[in-house]
Length: 213
Ligand code: UDP
Ligand code: MG
Image 1 (spheres, protein in one colour):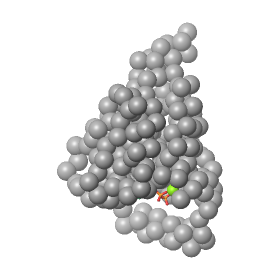
Image 2 (cartoon, protein in one colour):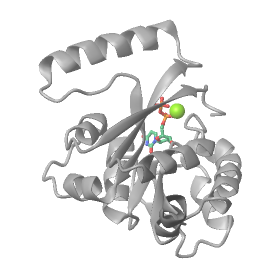
Image 3 (tube, protein in one colour):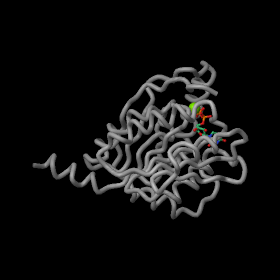
Image 4 (cartoon, helix red, strand yellow):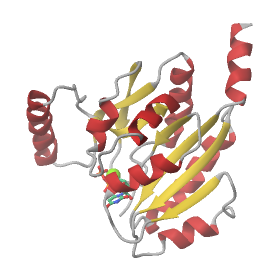
């Protein structure tokens, strides 16, 4: 009875999937195919919002060509390359869902984990962090410098910013609204996403190397 009630509620919810893209021509078709397969089997409504961060290749053309963009797929084009953080800010202001999942286009964040994230959200949390257990394709220097960075950051920061949690996460509407209401313009997204608090759960996943590009 409880399971039935939960799935009925989920059917009425909309999940937004926010994808920042910059020069992802070589991987975007595979990404969209894999994402579509996942979306078709989700028990809720979805919208996919791509934010093109000033790509100079044909990434936008490919996004527009696939599945005539309707209400459930939108493309926001930034006038130039502003960086991923700015692309995410623009996207978060535009998403209409009850929750959003931020997903990289290079398949380092596997779209196949979306159902697990949804289930976790349905258990009553507002944020689902995705923590990497492996960082494939990264040099020892990147791993080492990341470790040092988080040590120093958490030393100076009042808010704990979890290590090995990137932008790949699910954020509920209450958190999206708090972030959008912030006056800051140059956001450090991982810090901002951690700052509002709320009920949070962390899932673990192996992060593959970038698919291509
Ligand atoms: N991206 C973006 N603007 C940029 C750089 C990257 O929107 O200036 C997008 C990129 O297309 C990808 C995501 O942000 O979908 C993550 O980028 P990348 O793979 O370069 O980052 P990393 O995996 O090294 O954190
Ligand atoms: Mg990447």
